[in-house]
Amino acid sequence: MPQDTLTITDNRTAKSYTLPIESGTIRAMDIRQIKTTADDFGLMTYDPAFMNTAYRTTHPIQRQPAAGRGGPFRCGGEPRRYARRVR
Image (cartoon, rainbow, N blue to C red):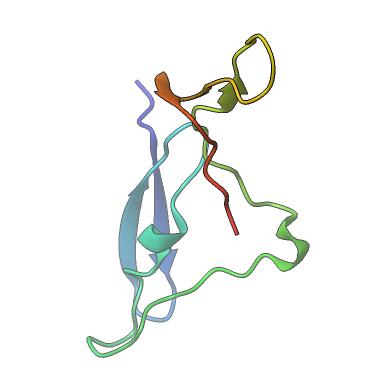
């Protein structure tokens, strides 16, 4: 039975790391545990132009049909008067 994990072997230290795979992706923060020494910051990922970066699935904000302007928004099932602005 296949496991939803990825095993990485660091050739610099000969240590192996097992990372969970969720929805076909691994978390970049899980890569940070790969270090050469205890005081090392950890391995980082680099993806120029975000060519191989996944997005997180969230509940979209949906405008509910309402008479006139200024009707309620629904965010993840909760009614709200205004949508949150993301800057």
